[in-house]
Amino acid sequence: MNTTTVPHYKKPLWDTPFAERARAFQQRDSFVPWAGYSTVDVFTTVEQEYFAIRNAATLFDLTPMVKYRIAGVDAERYLNRLVTRDIRKLKVGRVSYVVWCNDAGHLIDDGTVFRISEHDFRICTAERQLDWFMDSAIGFKVEIEEVTREIAALAVQGPTSCFVLKRLGLDGVDQLKPFEWRNLSAAGRPVMVSRTGFTGDLGYELWMRPEHALGLWDDLMEVGQSRGIRPIGSQALNMARIEAGFLLPNVDFISAEHTIRLDRDRSPLELGLEWLVEFNKPHFNGRRALLEESRVGPKRRLVGLDVAGNKAAHGALLYADEAGLKEIGHVTSAMWSPTCKRNIALAMINTPHGALGSTVWADVYLNRELMWERRMLRSEVVERPFFAHARRRATPPADR
Image 1 (cartoon, helix red, strand yellow):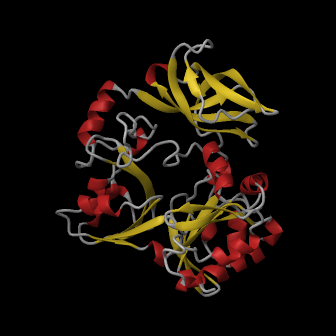
Image 2 (tube, rainbow, N blue to C red):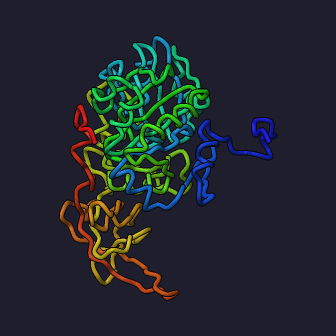
């Protein structure tokens, strides 16, 4: 059946332009929804896909990333009012990681901004933000258009990713510096290539017209065969992003537009993103509240943890002492890192206990042969990222 003719109420999730190839590689029938699309959670095993990220080259279908075109004579001024970074510093051909807040200084979402030309930008987010963007545009001469379905996207990540892209014919890709993009061509297909990604490793993201998606996938799989290329799902990507210390919406923070309970939204300062907040630029949403929070200090901080043992501390409550008498925070993301050989976690901790080197205790429950056992595991506040290989910034990257 041609899925394009199926009524939306019978097939509420879109297929991406890569869906035909993804289903052919799928061995687990494991799919999850993302921004209105059906995407792969696991192709084969999480372990195989994770080790491909760190040792070979991988393909991740990035098409569901929500994309907006921001254009007009006030586009720069509008974005500078919307986000906390100084967009005036962003040059054509560059990409910037940004966050935007409400008037209380609480995070709405994060994303990346591409400067296409002087008055033309693209902003990519994990979730739809059109209402917030349109409301924020009042008084600006700017056009805002969602272009998600007009752009297919693939993340090509891993230590052999540059070699594979050169074999594909993307001349000059090895000269791209981190957070740069360039319009290139592969077998006559125009492709925007950015040196960006969510793995903390060497990697690129390819942006193309949907009609070129399958041909590009096939060519990548063919030229990358000798370098162990394989498609990956969201579970393996999640492991890599935890090692890299990257935040995931609805896991490490919830948008201030979605929270129901008081004191559940977070500021960039609490999330360790103070480096994204530039107070010496013109006014932006949340500036006054963030200035005051910067003056008195945030009440809590998102930190990295080294946890004793090898059992991931998923969702663990954190205490100031081994007796568990004073609760001071909770774990948001956790894993045993095969690359770092460490039991790591991201955690939100009350400020007095979140200093580097501090000791806290994680309340972890282990299921052993259908019996639950409670463990209070000693944990140390450490720097993040946990994984930061030099190749992620090397230009040009070494051939592998």
